[in-house]
Length: 102
Image 1: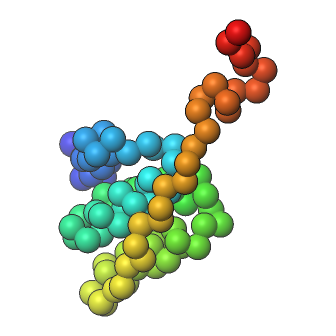
Image 2 (image 1 turned 90 degrees about the horizontal axis):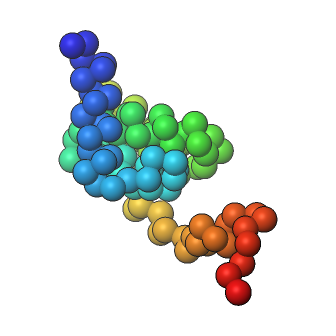
Image 3 (image 1 turned 45 degrees about the horizontal axis):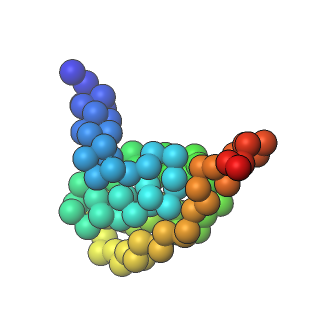
């Protein structure tokens, strides 16, 4: 099995084990920061790539990607703390056109 595919499988397994919402760039960023702290650079790379696709203009994700680049180059890095999770609307409230219970 190619190393790249194996790394992707491990990253996806880590996301599933940590119950990371793979459509939430903030959750992906937080998981990537934890992976960086654990020196799991491949998982951090995969998580940050996904987060960057979902939120390309988020400066926290850009800083984390730069930190990953520096860590790979052997430089010391300082990581941002994970962003606080914002309150999310319930699925019923977020669904336009949903029928309200009587």
